[in-house]
Image (cartoon, rainbow, N blue to C red; front, top):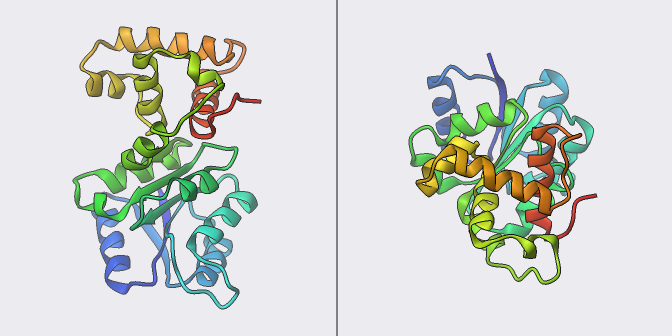
Length: 220
């Protein structure tokens, strides 16, 4: 069973998140109402995933985002899902950093949609990434002159954008109303154009492609 720590300074939202998770068989092992409590709780419980608000009070001057980034640095094996009222792509970029694994950024308004929260937690617990489609849309609209993504076709850009939201090839096919085989061809072409070759695992190449998309620069 996936074990989660939930952090939010709003008691109603905190209780709502706990209820949504427990209803789907996810164990909430602790809750926190500020960034300091969150960090202490993670040290005490070592959960699989942390679900935290992006803005919380702290005696040490931390907010939820700062605490989340610190957790990813200290505990790379623990997944982190940040919930936000704001569609701020810079926050998402800061959270992801150079490691788009076991991480997520969702707008709180999406939590009213069925399955969004627990699907995100399960994906992050498995080492995947989940980025809110609204954030991805803003990133996709940024000018990216000269980067390797400029070599991609419009359809390949669509596939990479959806890959960045955490969708599988089958999920991308459903969104674009094309066959899975067509998506696989596009993904292969994306990997080739970004210089991501077959000696790396498919998951590593997907992560590297997402990082390239997010940063607008070539992967290292």
